[in-house]
Image (cartoon, rainbow, N blue to C red):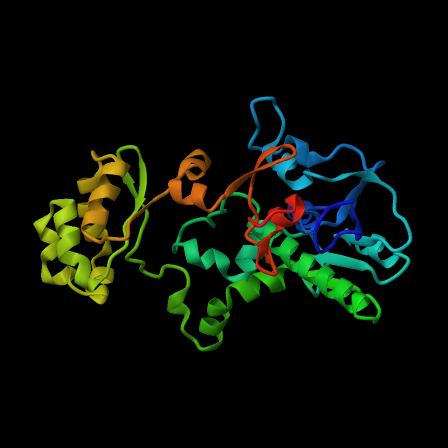
Length: 332
């Protein structure tokens, strides 16, 4: 039995035979969140090999880091009366003995399979990174699977709370597309108001830029242009056409030609140190190893030691305490 506010709660985590990558991640992440809060989470012993075991990134021992993260603390088991079910299979959920269940569906109005890419496209989220005339750009990882997993966990919490307060548990049903639309409410607002310029092809003046040993994210405002020009050693950035956000958006290609040339032979750390001196809030695009070694992330305990080794700390609190503190019985 786990330690935490959900201690004593048992959950069966089971995907359907036709589960998609998005569905597998969603079900597993919802179960992971519950497990971190103290629930005991089982996976059917007869479910067969888990495809996630072969998904990258792979660790030095040949195992999947993603599989280790999503399944940490879970074990095989069979359903018992009073258990909750987390699943993306409508038939499994329909056959469950009571309303202690949460179904994760791709959409509300159709059953055909969806992927992270198709959900992000349908919700407008791809517009954020889209360009006119270019093929859709798939983002790394399983963005919508994690979103759906968190929403499903919320549904499970609501059902459990209803039971704890003396009522009946409530069957939950969530749609990944609706969760994605909620995340991207600005896109929906722009669509219904006719302001489609806020979607694909929108000129963005803050763009990731290559430097000698990686990538830098330059961030600046009108008042920062003198210091930006100083950092770049480029007087042309002081020209009137770059003085305002509107002017910079009209001349983005030329502005970033100057910035990219200025940063091409400079190391990220040197750029960031000088940016701090000039009060420019630049950032570096970091690898997982760099994130783990970052002093700020170490102070925040972004990586914590778990039973299976170091794991990302979940950004969740219960009454002001982290879920890891609940499990450890500490105050972190």
